[in-house]
Image (cartoon, rainbow, N blue to C red; front, side, top):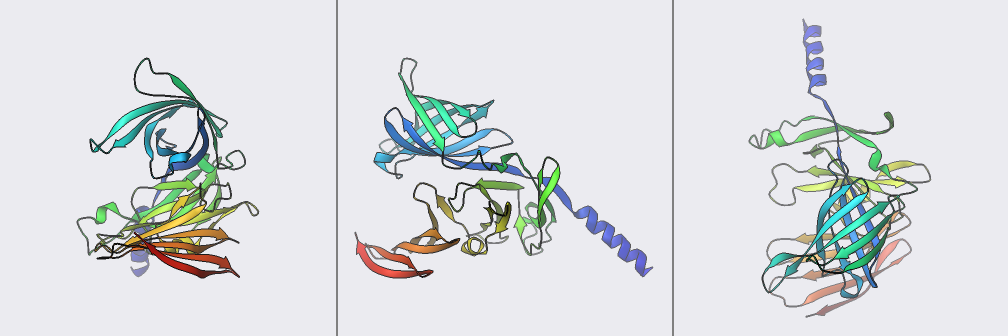
Amino acid sequence: MKKIFISLLMIICVFELKAQEAKIISIINFTGSIDKYPIEMKLEINQKSDSVAGEYFYKKNGNVNKMILEGKLNDGLLNLQERAYNAAKRKYETTGSFKLNYIDQIYLNGSWQKPGKNASYLTVKLSARENLKAFNPSNYVFQYVRNRAKLDYIPADAQYYFDLISLKVFINKSMRWAFTGFNDVFTKEAEIQLEDLNFDGYLDFKVPIYYPGLAKGDYSYLYFIYDPKNRGFIQSKQLNEMGVVFFDAVKKEAQTVDADGSGNEGTRYFRWQNGKLFLVKEERIYENDSYMHYTYYKIENGKSILVKTEKRK
């Protein structure tokens, strides 16, 4: 009787497991120009729906003044609508549109036009910062194996969370990599985000994860970096411990942001060296303090060494 019970329990556990193909978002950075004006563009391409979202900015204005982009990529033709924030009207307005050909997954060539039928066209020429010709996993199949999480402390929201059991990567229906050993890793939608995390030109990937029951800081990522020498992905313990990290392909910097909700906020900037991230700068503001506080570091002998501190209004 005991053996029968154990067998039934094993069968139930097996049937609870669910394999699901993940949605893939490719985050690609482009550099080039509109007419004679240099720009930087960042696009998030949904490989399943072909929807595209992103932003761009003119280099002369800096990355503070960004335009928002939305559109579709169909059969190599990318149509994007551009919106910019109108401070006087306190709203976003359509300020232009792109019609671009996506060539060899490397180049975006076409035109930009202001709103209006008779508006003139400007030539657009962009190229991807990532080496997509050498390595592009957007056509791979990433498969989650997971089961529904049992979370007694949040019964109303437990239905939205899944325990991640394993992650498998297939090329031409053949499994190439399998990642296991996930402990208390909770996911929602099955999603993979491809992005060059260490600015070596190769797309890496990150997995969105969640912390059930938290009102703030309730999400993060697991990060996997592609090693071209060994042709495989390696999970980055350092990035995992850093939590939510933002990657600036133009400056080749990684950034983290923190805030306590009381006016104490900070941004930390990191640079890669020899496969590790090192702190190079920190900006911080404090409650009841009108100054911005800056701390600068240099990388020396495998450490971040304090160089100077200053404060400015």
